[in-house]
Amino acid sequence: MNTTTDRIERQIQIKAPRSKVWRAIADAEAFGDWFGVALKGKRFVSGERVSGNITYPGYEHVVWNVVIEKIEPERLLSFRWHPYAVDPSVDYSHEPTTLVVFELEDAGKGTLLRLVESGFDKIPAARRLEVFRMNSGGWDQQMRNIESYVAAH
Amino acid sequence: MSPRTNPRAANTPRKRVAAIRRTLRNRTLQKNASIFAALGDPTRLRLVAALCTGSALSIAQLTSGTDITRQAVTKHLRVLADAGLVHGVKLGRERRWELEPSRIDDARRSLDAIAQQWDQALTKLKAFVER
Image (cartoon, rainbow over all chains, first blue to last red):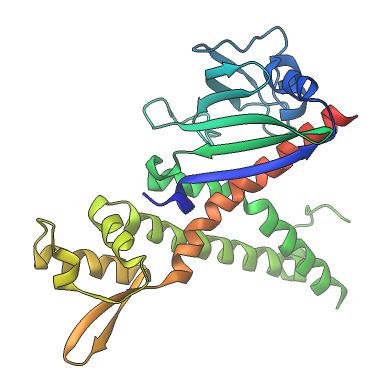
């Protein structure tokens, strides 16, 4: 369909050798540390499901649940998941998944990390609304700004 | 900042703003819901994709090469028009249909929200590795 609505692409330059960046992504516990999910004692194995609770305050009830797809040491790691599957009362298992791919490449003295999440065009329309609900944080902040402005004037 | 526990605060600016906030948020959600409902159909998505080239197309052009009837396309265009995704334009005696790009931008914003979360996650990863 339309690549502008189907995928997200991001890249980031990291001042560290590729092996070090790779460990932060491929080592489940390290991944959990920066991503905010409890993965102590877990391992990423291609073809296997791995899950853990989100550690971000207020979202501890949300279970992060992915199936590792590909692991190519120091180069690529990918998994499939249900994006924004944050409502514990909803069974997302029959919905299509999106594919998340981390790719590493040497860049000067550091590492270039490329992230692609694709498959959004297949996500049911109603579910995409979750994204708006989740994103209401930014809107809340704006409204708080107006609120304090109104209160002060 | 005082907590919002005062029951007599109904007419404070704070309460009024809270009410405005709820209304605005509901309106945004309703608007986006109608956009996604309109897009949540393969025929209509195909119409939007055809109109994505930017030119205004007639019903004949929109149905050529497909097995969709004129009547069906007209019905689908009506749904898209109601959601504000397309609008009709008169070209001489012919009626053509054109995309309303700002509504597609609304739909794109949901992806932007996810992208923003990735930005945060990747920034944390960078800090984690570089520390």
